[in-house]
Length: 109
Image (cartoon, rainbow, N blue to C red; front, side):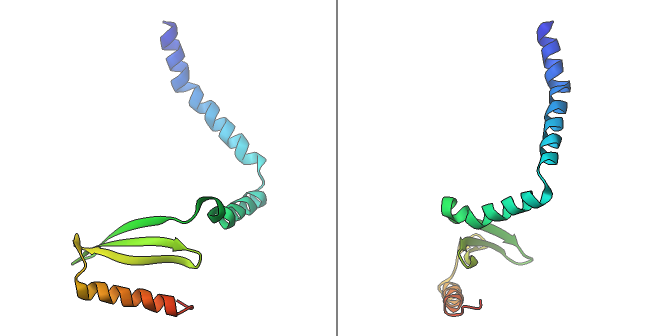
């Protein structure tokens, strides 16, 4: 019987305590300080963790694209990897490479 009471306490009382502690924690940090800390962490994150890399699958009416996106110091760069589950044709690969070369030679982009 003790086990059932303990489980009932865990299921009923413990979530309320956790929520109360979370609300108390939120109230102790002023909003301006929280914003400063988030901005600082975002600006200094690359020094500790590096950059991210994602694969993004996009569904259009006639095509499913798999893009590879990497973060750089200047911003994210996306490259088309697959179209409809297949590697790019030599012509499409050339077009994609030219687009990336244009990005490299154009500081505004």
